[in-house]
Figure (spheres, rainbow, N blue to C red):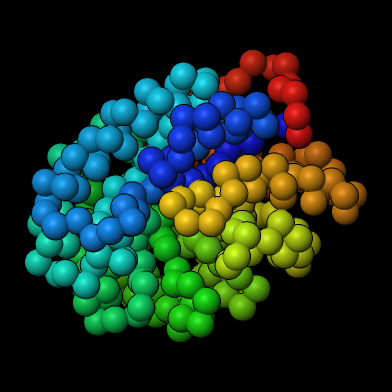
Length: 277
């Protein structure tokens, strides 16, 4: 089965991981801007990172016949520095018309601080003014419910935003309901040590149905599994779910959400199904 990983940080992965993804049926990935494993010290550091995302990663993905899209922002872990964040936000429009740039993300909260909220709102303002899609990072573990509530309140307070053009990622059982009730898309992230497992993602599909649901690996620098989406596919099959339902979540839904971006271009794979899952 062909699938799309809508949230994976390939700059942290070796080139062989692209080959592995392709062998498992992955035809496209979406890579949000995120933390580099350390705090960057200047706007020029982010400019080089954005060049890597918009230029080199597309080329590296193409070697394995995988299509690559990206998102741009200063992530929540570095948003405590409001001065630097504003310099980065002012620089982002230089890249927004680059091929494959889907929107602003992943923005959100990390420790739910005042400065993080300020930077989040300024990202929202840029996205609203330029009519961009938005990809949201919700905090980890004990801060998740509070941070998700804060994020949803800020999103709902901005009347300029079309909720159908916003993806709230890293949802779990205690946050997914409110995300979907407010008309946003919800992303389920499969991590080996936190967030969600394939089985819990199956539970949420069964509880809420497949509409406006995405599933991703968010593979990054830490413990993560770049082939987590195929794990979800297998878990769904073991529960007896139809191929059509699984395909909707892992392939059709990402295409529907991303298709709202003016920079979205997708070349469908050939009709023959790949080996593997």
